[in-house]
Image (spheres, one colour):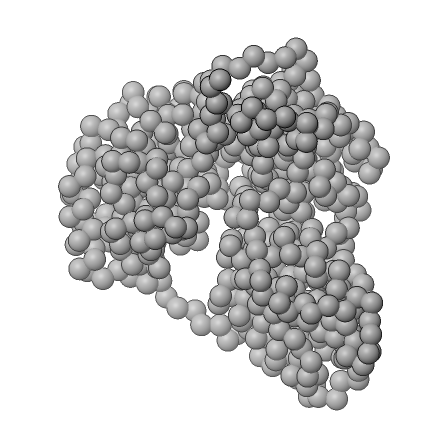
Length: 546
């Protein structure tokens, strides 16, 4: 039976699978590998699914992972809700305890655990229907854009297959391919009147704009209205070469962007989810009306009233129609002087006292921005350090990935593995924090074993930075958030990777050039001061006055 199940996955064009083997999935995985599928064997089940998440995002297709039953499935519970909230299509082949056994050590009711995360769970208990059920799982993952977990008892996998030789038609031959949705003329006219009455327009693009190929249309609308451009964090870099792009909108907005968003009187959100952390509730643009252009526009998101004006359409077609309907004008907002301010103003100008022998994380990022090649793949993890790493404005969106929808740290190394699998010809740079990397540091061995070309840049402040600064803002003891500067370079060498500790930035350009020439994998550990607090934390958690 496991031969047929492996062929059913292969027929779905599964050519990469992230795996950790156990009794309930290893025979199937061996057969899938024999079909020609590239198997990346990780050291923790969470990392298999997290890597598949990044692979799915980067390839805009279904990511596939496999784990065994019981503890293999329970290890997925942090990654699954992140994938659900990021709308990532995944199929997970998970075993189940053998049905014939009255007792099995790793038996657990897996379905409610998976369902609680928002993912779908299907018990495959009828052998004759399993190939169709696999096909339907891929259809569901693609249509609903969420993970589907398949529970397959491993005693059923070992049964002989006496069904038909031919498998059902694969999902990619059956999936509807609807054309992009054009806007209704009445909605375009209403939106055009709204735009015509605005003086300071910001066109804000999200991942929906990226997927629809709407970047050029957004630029054209901003230029015609004399407006500015911005993106959500996942779409960061979509307008990296436009001199009137003010950067990310939301928690990671640079200094000049905050000032300009506060002056806006209309924000046109294109293909955005209008999440709280993107400023969707208007906290960054208190004077502005909001027009939401999306195939599924919303009025309320994450408990906030967001947009009162809507244009239901494909992002590109909607913005193209709106641009054609509005009159051109030279806005007072756009000017050479403003473009120069956007270009030359530092993302954060706050002054901190840096201890001798430690680095300012803002200086680290500025140096990396200058030194790293433009075509390397960039993966930004989570945690306090991620604000600093997001401030690399010259990097195009096509080479950038971040997935942060569940607020969990510890995913960075897995995401880098997924991107490296999706882009094997590219160098991948992971930007991570010390606390995040330490959570799954064992995957350094996975990187070495599979020969992945990954440079890991660690912003090491010797602590869980977000918690440290929040505790300090409350005047609370910080002991539980401080761990000290561990030797990541030594840890990397122990796993067979190159490692280096940075306490100054003098040799960085030369070392980047050397790494570009040699390839391979390395961990670069930048010791930074914990006195530098990101603007996000400073705004949300100001220090209490005595």
